[in-house]
Length: 483
Image 1 (cartoon, rainbow, N blue to C red):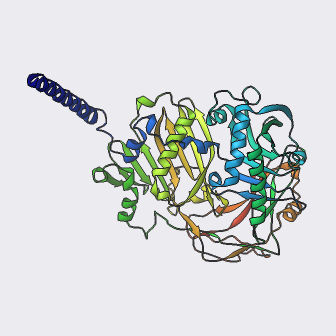
Image 2 (image 1 turned 180 degrees about the vertical axis):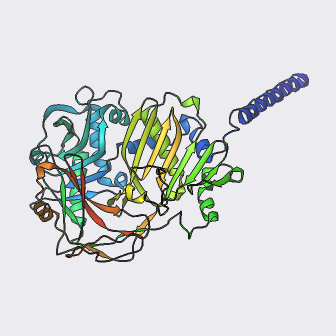
Image 3 (image 1 turned 180 degrees about the horizontal axis):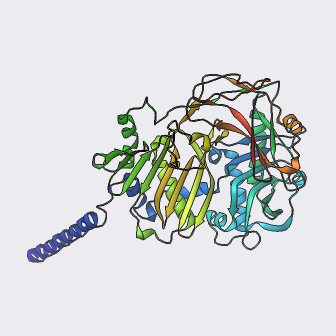
């Protein structure tokens, strides 16, 4: 008995030794080139990508509550949408529609009819693919398959004359079709009705609200209004500029150390065009003098080839969540693009329940004059951009600003409808009207609140105010100060 036990013990020890050698071989010869904390996190297998990371792909960029009251008021939220009770309940109804909703057919989009009663509206910043959305809801085919390719928004309308009936409309503006589904659920119907009513009661009298254009031609946009002569708000203030004379190299280095698993192994250099670069054998992190950070990963993970769009998106979201330098900045998916085995994800910022519009051509106008024939060293069109190739995150660019409320108060006074009339803008030529913050200069923004003479009314250091952004049918974006 003693010999048998001893032999078993010896065999067990040998197995442990073999396993240790195998693991050491993997560590040294397969992964030794990589010392990126971010890369290590992102490449530990599909099971390690955070559960539900892909779910935010289906969260709309703005949530609209249609109160359907006598004065036609609506509420719009851009911040913390996924955490709002009314969104959670309405999304449950959408999930039921995708799983087993009763399809009632389609008809041309007519917002004068679609918004007659109380409703919750999910609006997306891009054309949402039906297949991807069904996959998010756990359905390979689902009730949407074969009926529509995609949609721009969803209207969830509890029936005013029924205790259990919810009408779900998938609005496909590309084809000017509204696809209607019916869901019967007493609890959800009641919760959605109560949620809309509760939101209406909780609105402060001086809050901004919106009026829908409710056009019959497949268009709908929202005009902001308020009680009294002006709407008072706090301008946006830049909390931190990473690249300036006041920021030391040590401070910059501290900010980028989290991108490296072994920060002491990285090296530093500055190029002729004043780009600060930190790098090791696989990772490069650059700071540009336009306050842009660019992270590049040069080691591919062959195990992740063939990844799906949602897997790549989950990879991107996991990465953003590890970037503690984002601070409290809130962001949303503004769009994506696919090219063969490469996927690009674009994110923009939200602050104080308004979207943040960034004038990148202005931001890229560096204080340093370019030499003749020299081109800009980096280009962006969104607040953050992530590239995933063959399942591996290979590039990340972001505008290195953190936002906070300025300690000054400003007023929004411009009646946008009157302004559009003065400019002879016809609703037929407009696709959208959005109120948001506007970042348009690199440092020390002059706060753009124009008075009646067209001169700057107030200046604030590193602050930005609210603008109207009017998206025209030809793709042009017209902007106007809120003063």
